[in-house]
Every structure is written in C-alpha cells, then in structure tokens.
Image (cartoon, rainbow, N blue to C red):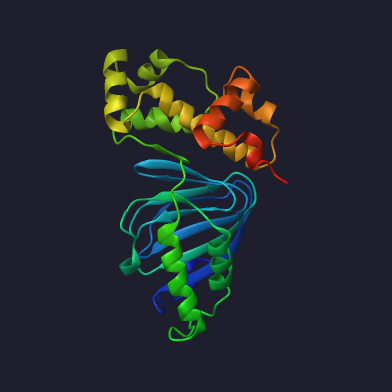
Length: 252
C-alpha cells in the first residue's frame, strides 16, 4: 500500500494515485493540503467528516476540499482511484459531497491516474487534466449523505446509529443515551441536523442498505438487516429516495 507522503503532490495541478484496500480497512481522521477526489471503481466506502456521513457506492466519487478532516472505511475490498487537486481549482461549493461519475469522466480519471507525476502541462496530459476539471464541475451531487451534529451528546447517538443502522431503539432510548430529556433531545437534534431523528435514521439506513446491496447482499436480507419490517416497504422507500429500485445497485 502506498501513501501520499511517498509522492510530491505539488508538481502539477492534478496528481492521480491508485490503491487496492482490503475489507475492513479504516483510514483514521486526517486531512490533506490538496482537494481530494476518491473514486471507487469497485467496492463501497464510507466517509465521515465533522459535519456529514457519506456512503460512496461503486462508480461514484466523493469531493473532499483541502483541509477537511475525514475518516474513510471500506465495507469490502475497494479498488480506489484518487485525485489530488490544487486547492486553487476548488469548485464553487467548498463542501464535501458525493458526485455521480459519467462514463466520460470515468475514462479521464483512469487516464490521469496513469500519468507520470511530471506530465507535460502544455501537452496532451495537461489538456486532459483541464477537461477533467471542467467535467467534474458539471457532475451532479448524489444523495448519499446524512448531516452529523456538532453537539457531542447528539454525535454519540448518531455514531451509534451509523455503526448499527438496524438498531430498533426508540427516541426515548436515544435521548437517554444523550443524557437529555425527550423534548430537549428532539428539538436539539432537528436544530443541529435539519431533520427529525426518524428521517435522519431512515437516511442512514438507506445508505447502509445501498452499501450492502452494492457489496452483493440479497435485497430481502438487507431489508431486515437495516430495520425494515418487509422487503416491499424497504423497496418502496429506496425507490422514493434514490429514484431507482435496489436492483439498480446489485452486483452484476
């Protein structure tokens, strides 16, 4: 496994690396001086920042601005392609987000990763890098995220739910974990995340489900694992959230 410290990432506006990570790999909280784009050719990653939890399915990528602390973990084996981008090229929205990857952009990412790090900026490689930066700016964001609260009491609850999305404890149990009364807990949770606990947990469950399905788990098993009463209820909610049925993310 190679590390970014092994390379001079400041020579060119974009530098690409590739790595293969085993199931269970966790890259603890860290940050980079450059923008980082993590693209999963195969496998599913999760990424947690101070403010948001993401899941990155295959053929998607997460844009991480320079200086943003983040933790990345791999559910199963992950084939990863990473771009390190000069922060001068940061996009208009300086926040972490998952983006859809077009076939055209995928081809450019794979091509740039193959470049020598001293590539010719004025030549073919430099022109491809310029097109890549333009194309990334046009890619739509994807809804694979859940906001994380700043209050450490609420954060403790959210991390517990992220670790076990199928946990069936009710709001009173979670309020007890936070050491807060029910009303105080529910008001604080909505204030900090912009949504109620039930909606937030539903989002986390759907992200977990997407991760499991993309890893090859059967839809019926996934539905029960993430806390749904029936596969049909799960499928209906999944389609409302992502616009496609769970089968769209199944391993082929």
